[in-house]
Amino acid sequence: MMLYLILALIFAVFVALFAVQNASQITVTFLAWQWNTSVAVIILGAAACGALFGGMLAIVREVQLKLKLRNMQSQVNRLDDRLEEAEIEKERLEALLAEKGSASGLVEGKSLR
Image (cartoon, rainbow, N blue to C red; front, top):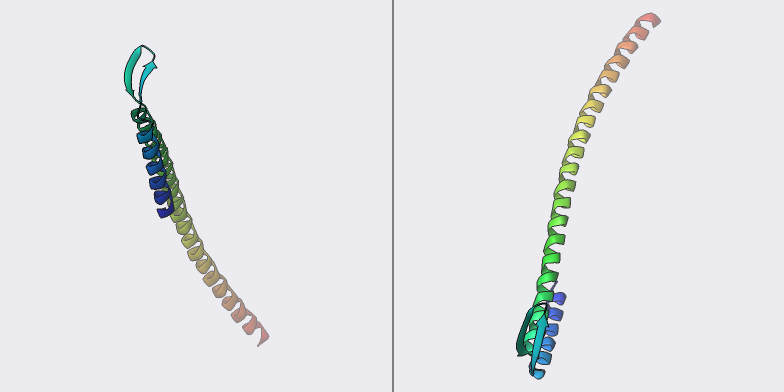
């Protein structure tokens, strides 16, 4: 994460240097609008819009991952509950089998005498 931040700062410095070195006036036309501004404003505006769009995509992805994590955590909790129920049932059946085995041993013991 720190590496990405450092690379983003280096990139921002290069964009700012490029914008300052290209500060001549231009006429920008978009649909019905037309205005005069410097190339630096356009470059910095485009970089800011790109960073904003990228940040919004990152936030959307993070929210998706958190929702998926929450869903997986609830699934793990449900499976833990089912495992606990299965272990209790196993112990109950083993105890029942042990009782049946000891009762069967008593019957066999009586028949041998």
